[in-house]
Image (tube, helix red, strand yellow):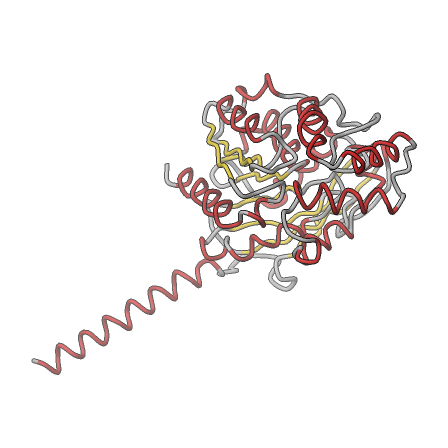
Length: 340
């Protein structure tokens, strides 16, 4: 009897181990996928009024009910600064897609300014969604910064295709973004630094190395990513290094220090339209962000199914400087919506 009990225990352990391996292998099951050879990378054709072009995407994982498409900032930065997701999403068995928008580093670059507008990028996201076969049973759109603007605009037109929306580190009003930058954050800079920044902006001397130096040392390390520059993650550095600056300048302006001049996003405001987005929506704000965290908390109350995640130690890239809070909250939201 004792030997029989030992054998039963042994086979029970083997069975549990096998089940655990099956569960793990399911997430990495590529059955029926067409992107196996390329490691999940697909160049997706995008039709535009100016011709057909291809955008770069990369899938990780397999989960039929949670598929997250990542919208990077800029416009014109890259997916690379999202690489922290690799440390958290696989363990939570979340399927996710890196994606460089048209004109960004890994995608094609037609260099056509007529495509540099919100309407084009919304339609581009929709074409990417169709190509990736995402739908309302599994499709979560997660946008950071400019990606948050794009996520809001996409949801206002195509929310029937969404299961959930995440707006991270972005307000719904550029006028409010500018007001916060000029009336709150600017006053936290040393007066002589602010004076020099404004002088360079007045001259539109945006490529002056001194402009970038001042912003990186005094503003970006306080409000973009709260680490010394020599400790910034490689993916973040590559994202900035690969920026399509003409596109960024055209739509955002010369820097993350508010929007100046006649950049195309100047005046964008969807504050009154947020109640029209009825899918579950998570807004993520951070104490030291370039965006007003109180306004982002207010935003979360305007979505009928809104939630707010506050990163008390984070900035614009809270996914790095308040990483544990950021990813635990984001994953919790995805799981909660998935279980409803």
